[in-house]
Image 1 (tube, rainbow, N blue to C red):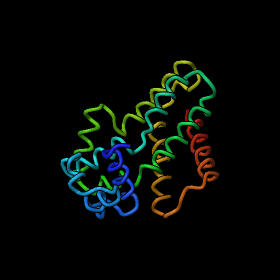
Image 2 (cartoon, rainbow, N blue to C red; image 1 turned 90 degrees about the horizontal axis):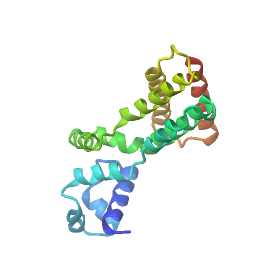
Image 3 (cartoon, rainbow, N blue to C red; image 1 turned 90 degrees about the vertical axis):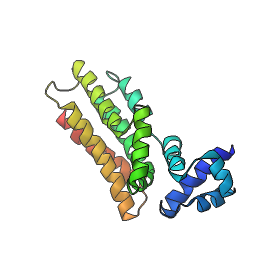
Image 4 (tube, helix red, strand yellow; image 1 turned 45 degrees about the horizontal axis):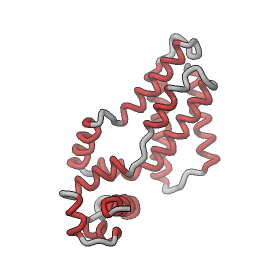
Length: 194
């Protein structure tokens, strides 16, 4: 692993364990095993470093959404939604600390938003992808013609986000059995709405 990757991993670790306010360049450099000067050879400033951490180290849900689009007409709608709900709950649980930290710094949030826009990605894309999948299933007759795909997509993904938020707020690691039960419940509610 190269110096840049080591710094990114250290920055992610420091933010997750100590919070963004305590994630100084000095702390990150120490955690990476380098000097601050080395850190600044790879990143112009702390904001650039954190934007790169968000881009390169925080997981994304988009591969699961892209795979879902190829699943239209295959398996059951419930099974497909269950895989997405689990991927979403895992994604939000894993990434919530970094996103919360990002929202605490307006300039960092603005730079992150710009970086997402440059790549034509962002949180809205997951809802759009799920709604697109549901529209494909509607065209195949597997979803009711009157179903509101964007609303169901927003409710399912929003519930997964809420699950992650509450787990972090309560200071508990999600129990795999509880997470599975939650995903099944929210998917069953979504399927009824479809």
